[in-house]
Amino acid sequence: MSHPFEAIVLGAGAAGLVCALTAAQRGRRVLLADHLARPGKKLRIAGGGRCNFTNLHMDASHYFGANPRFAVSALARFGPWDAVEFVARFDCGFEERDQGKLFLDVSADRLADGLLDACREAGVTFAFGEPVRSLEGGEIFTLRTESGVFAASRAVLALGGPSWRGAGASDLGFRLARRFGLAIQPPRPALAPIPWTGAAGLSPADLSGISLPVGVSCGPERFVDDLLFTHQGLSGPAALRATLRPAFASAPLRLDFLPGEDIFDVLALSSGKTLARNALAKRLPARLAEALCADVGGRRLADLTRAERDALATRVKDFALRPSGDPKQARAEVTTGGVDTAAICQKTFAARPAPGLYVVGETLDVTGDLGGYNIHWAFVSGMAAGTAL
Ligand code: FDA
Picture 1 (cartoon, rainbow, N blue to C red):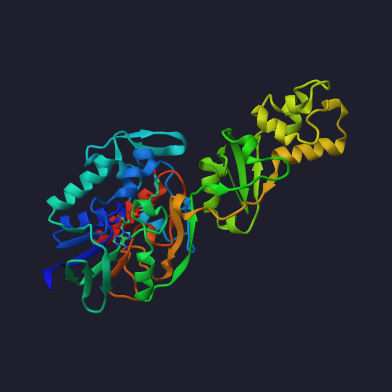
Picture 2: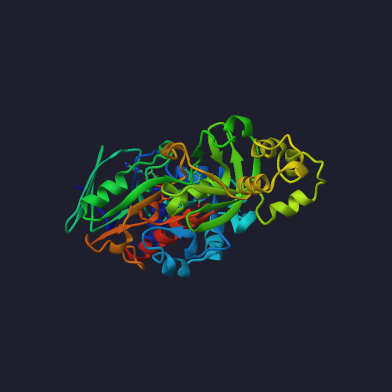
């Protein structure tokens, strides 16, 4: 058996890199394993290559999971300005965009490569580019890869979730967790485009390319963000965020195409001689206005009955739609669900049923909203476990 390590960190994504670095800087002998030869791929492609790494509105209300309070204490210990300070260690500055999102002001490769270099300098041993064969537990954890056998008294599952396989994702984290007696909350692809073939006069073929802010209601939750119609259905932040909501699988989506506006005030801006679709087109893209007015668009406002006006108002302010299929795992930025946090220590991320085992990052049943919340969670949880190893 080679190398007497104190900790084996499985997965060199954002969470695993931060965990290994933190532990090694505290003097721990760490092995970091990943099946990719050049890991940290999701970190590199996040935010279109600029990695939206945190958010100024950081708090637990932006996270989803069976225990929504689980993230509270870890987030209290590491906030957005801590994240800014952390990335600055790798010569990465930031730029603020909408809704408090902080992106790197340089390529995300600099952060990923900086983390790898820092791990190497801190003495972390890499086992990259080799599939994991097995991880056995007990007093000592034994990791078998294609070419090596490694042992340590502690092991960290930092293997992410199965979404976006092109970036090295797999369900190994969930499978190993199960083997160590941990429960898994049902995984579901999220932060993904919504397949939709159209309904009630609205069709993706007619609307493709239109982007506009909409109010989205999914179950009890409501938010406003940008929606993009595509040939396959709905995309843009509004659609992606909808897929993360717990009610997404069961409740229809309700869209408000004029968030913050009263539809009757909008119609009142036009004279009675104006065609309904032209009146709406003063506030909405013409193709969408025409589709929403499918029944009455060619008629003048003055000629609409009260019932027709009310029906038009409902289509504009409360358009109900059901997806025509499930979001695709290959295009989902995250997987919701994962290792049940009921068995995980909020401070150290140790798994109670398996002494010496830790679980961090997206492998846990903690999923952040769009906007930098997931990379932040990977940092926070990786650092907490790295401090405890
Ligand atoms: P992560 O998936 O990063 O790392 C897991 C590691 O385990 C990988 O290196 C993988 O190769 C390795 N691994 C997996 N299976 C293995 C196996 N069988 N054997 C060995 N190794 C294995 N979030 C955010 O906050 N801001 C953003 O801008 C974006 N943008 C974004 C864009 C795109 C396209 C995607 C796909 C995702 C995002 N995200 C995001 C989400 C974010 O990237 C994600 O939640 C975190 O990277 C999760 O970090 P982890 O370290 O937990 O897993």
